[in-house]
Every structure is written in C-alpha cells, then in structure tokens.
Length: 213
Image (cartoon, rainbow, N blue to C red; front, side, top):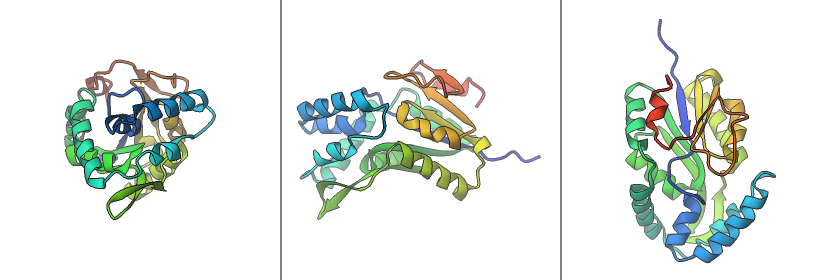
C-alpha cells in the first residue's frame, strides 16, 4: 500500500536572538535602531503582529545586490547546526519540504538556493531600480503563515494529518490548525509547549530524525 506524501515546514533555520530580519540590519550598521524596535516588540508580541513595517523602513536606500551578498554570508555563518544534513536526509526520504517565515524574501531565496527546499516564502521588501524603498510589498506575519500553509497543502494535495510544522516562536502558533503535528523546536524566548506535540529544546537538529519522523 502506497504511503501518503508528507509535508514538513520549517519556521526556524538560523541561530539568532532577535531574528534574521533584524540581524541583517545590524550588519548594515543600524544596531541601535534595531534594538529599540526589538525591545518594543518583545513587550507586545503576545498581543499580535507588530513591527515588520518599522523594520522594513530601516532598509531604505540599500541595494538589492548588497542584500543578496549579505544574505549568503549570513546563511553561511548562522544556519542552525545540522540543518543542512537534516533537510538533505528528509528530501532523500521523499518528504515535501518548505520554509515559512516573516524574514525578508531575499534571505528566504538564499535559503532555498543552499537547501533542497520545495518552497521558501517570507516578507517581500519593495524595490525600485534595485534599491529598497523602505516599504513592504507583501507581508508575511503570523496569520499569513497559516494562510500560505493552507495554500501549499492544497497545491501539493497534502492533508493536515500529513503536515508537520517545526515552529520556534509564538508567531508560528496560528499554523497549529493546519498541521497534524506541531513541534516546538529551539524555543528560547517563550514557551509554546501548550500547543506543541513535542518540544525539542536541544539545538541539535539530528534529534528530529531520532523522533520517528
């Protein structure tokens, strides 16, 4: 009897405290502004989405070429331990693999170039003549993630029962309703254990393969 295909979605890929969207700005010399925004966000993140527009505004004037260069360097240095090996292994085993995040699309595109992902979606910054305007053309917040996941399940003809989400923060929780299994991975800033089927606190991604996935 043929097994159903399964979809695995990763929402955390980098070693980061504030998140890659903000980390890239630190590399651009805007650490002070970023820390201020992050402090405000930490106070109200349990209420709902906030701050993507403020973060995007700080990208104004930066070339798309420069951002792509920073993205490759960032991925090379900050990809979570074991991520590459785990994704390659799961791909060989026939899983459909995706990445969903509020991180900027230029970074998500880079992630798809270095990992065998079927899709990788994030927030689109607006560019004019190759320069960031400081605005967002497509926002991916916590609720949009759930909508995108629902669309992907439909496109790949995957049931919720055959969908596994690896979430790392409160912004991933809305996807619970679209997944058969929701796993809290490397949760540092808040607990999502109330909704996760299992919680993997160790940063070693190889634990994923040892849990029978």
